[in-house]
Image (cartoon, rainbow, N blue to C red; front, side, top):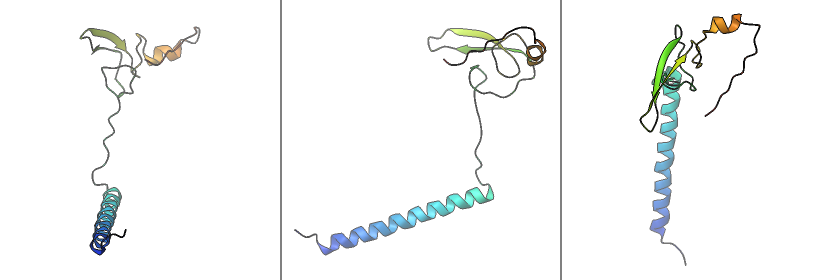
Length: 105
């Protein structure tokens, strides 16, 4: 069973259009990257959630987050986003005690 000749021509035409479209998209992406058009916006973390990376705060601050059940949880975080009452200079100055950090969900 052989395919009609018109089918083979349609496949070649479609493949040509797909190839040209892919090449143009790649060229457009390279030009945008080269000239800095549409730079990526790095927006890491959320100030309401302490375990995500967030922007550095000026000092110890009180934050809150809302759980999926609607319960509001208030907490204290320091300049580095760590949930603690101690600022970073206080933690670094206290060399006489042993500190344990826990991460994760």
